[in-house]
Image (cartoon, rainbow, N blue to C red; front, side, top):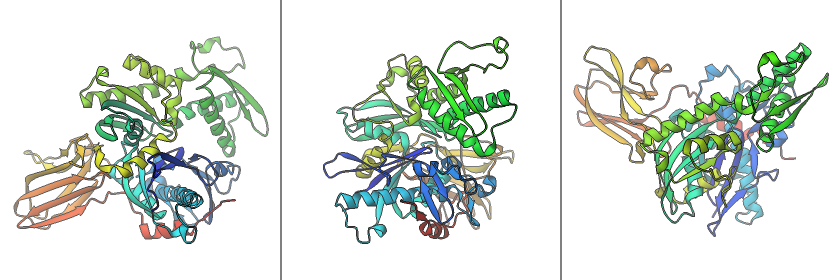
Length: 513
């Protein structure tokens, strides 16, 4: 029997794992033999290359390299302006994820054939089940598009699990007693803080919050901006657009290097000139008026990062408040996501929690913990309790005749027990409008309701029921006059035809040589 795989579908890197028959987690190498795969695609419309191979193709200016598309999940095609349109077809971010998942699936199938778990004949069409991780702060439409991407890639999705919950499962699988754990998950493009009670193979989420556009990429951009500014100052011209990928590449390397060294030298080797810059991790600020003519402004990475650190700190404190816990109530702090390696993160956490931060834990790896947790979840779904990431409400009319949003399913309500039922008065030809967010003001929902349910012609009171499952799918129903109108809410902004997307994705060849 083919194992169920756990997929960490990250903004910058992906990882795939499964649990062997002996109960030991196994990380599946990709088709290039790497434990993690950069979330990068070079795509001509007929052939796609991935990971390190795709990154090496950046010099091709006709067909661009695609990355960071996870940050665009859930956005409308109109707002993206054809950003992912290739060969006349708009793949949208879900299509990019589908192509990446197709590659990861091929790597898993290849691994199972080599290990003798399945036979090679017809293996490319084998039914492969998967649990896929998403940021805890992903909304329903983002989760739904992730599921669609997996289906288009030929995967059978048996679960969508939050990334910090998966990390906590990996951490807690060997604990012999329950502990309250704060998971600080700073990935390449997203950030989540989750407080979980875990141990003995179980996990119960207490509270979670985050940002789907905060991650290592934002720290990269601090270095990119500095390099671009200094190039303009030194040479009187900007870095050519077609070579900005070099700046981006060097910025990522510099960020990683500054986690190990207090000072590094960044070298930007362009066709027309070579520029070298000294970058410091920390130190005293240098006033601008002390710069000598032609000298580069001193770059202090941690000083430049204070706004980003403040955002992380604010979200972390918000989660503690929502959980009604203080630092003394937290037994362990677990770091997940590659960007958590930065020393400034450890320093901030140590200051906030007033304790030493454990960086190296036996059997727990920053890069593989989330995919292993997803694989563990496949085996023990009944042992995991998550929470609603965003409140769900409906539009009501106040006594003064003004519409407002009544939040019925509150954020951090446990799943799968997240069900609300109550009776409301409805007008003739009423429409049930369902909203996802934390405000009671209609104007704060710029994109309108998450979805709608046409009620027909009710008379008097109607019974409204809202429910959310573990995958974030929202089901709404209204009962009156002895019958029920029921549907899964289809979020606005998702205009993807799954059949067409599947056909397109399956027709793309994977570059394997």
